[in-house]
Length: 252
Image (cartoon, rainbow, N blue to C red; front, side):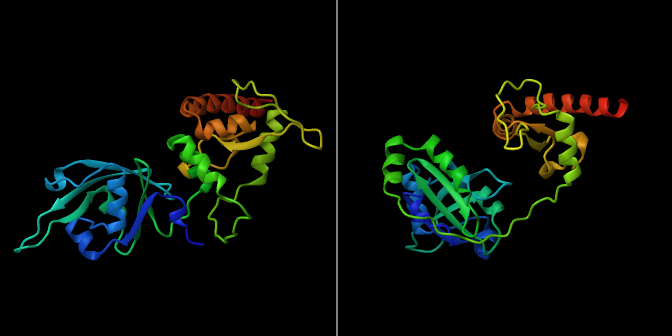
């Protein structure tokens, strides 16, 4: 199901990256896209591609978080031809010919997405909560009702080895393997403490699906390993602890 951008953005527009846009390294935005950028507080500069740089947060692309793009009016050759508004830099490098680019704003915040991208609504919701006027968030949320629509999607995921999961849980002896953990664990119906098996170096970053790279940790520590501001330091702490506990198994 296509994302209903009008339910998300104050203003938005969409236009494919054309061959001319790509070859000239100058994307010509549609009127709706220009309206969103201007509504966010940016006017096209008159100084060509060396003018103001605008920042757009990218939705639905795990490889690209932000784009920095120029936004300017380019004088065209020929009598009585009006200047053409263009965008350059990252936005041209990011999209391929034929990619339909959506640009929208929420207040002064600008976003870009490829029209066929799948946007994680939970992640986007947290972003809206952090970046948008609370009164506007509540007003929009209060207007929503009814059951959500369903959609089908294909997921490309890693096939994890169950023995690695079982080994990490056994090694943990029912305790979170992050040494600094102070969270209270809750008990499952079978009487065991609830733990989640996490890869110290994530599989998506080239980590192995092995006991030496797996840790049984509580849900709070698991989320912090992925999203906490100190996650790199916590990763190193966890890696050291896992290496020591795995070595102890070998020598036991």
